[in-house]
Amino acid sequence: MERSTFILSLAVLFFIFTTGLLLTQFLVQAEQLSQATELSASTKTLIKELGHRGCAGSAEDYATMRTCTLAAIEHIKERTQHTFTDDNVQYKNHNPRTNETGYLLLTNTGTDEFTSEDFILLKNKNIEDRGCVISGPIPPGYVCRLDFTTTCAPGDVLEVEYQGQTAYIKNC
Image (tube, rainbow, N blue to C red):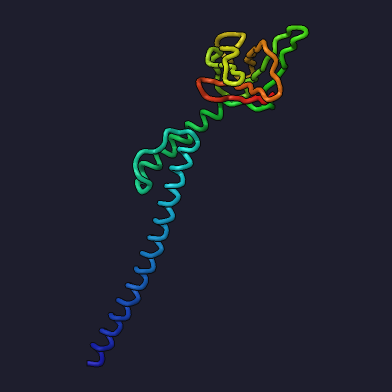
């Protein structure tokens, strides 16, 4: 009888220990799931704020969120490949005395070819120029020149769009 009581006691202790271990593991995984859902919802919001069309489905649908996030990253990479900074843009303002044309020279420092016709120069949201001076492809290392024939006064904004997306902004 003592032996069977001892074995039964060991079985009960083992059951209690296993239950405690599984409960702890369940609570840890529930917390991780909660954090993953929160991260997924934040990622969904960030993707929308960065100008991507957003992700269909709920934040708990991790497979859809993963696919959407990877697509958004590719979209954002593509958009940033078509942007310019002051380091690769030269600017000269229009000179009304000599009637010299003002211009922006955009150097293609990326790895993709640009299409000249896809560039638009806006001044204060009004179109100043369409397409580069030289038409056709703009390979890496080459320059696109966009001209404007009115003075860019303080407070004016020159904006370059490429394929409908803002590629460069210059405050005069």
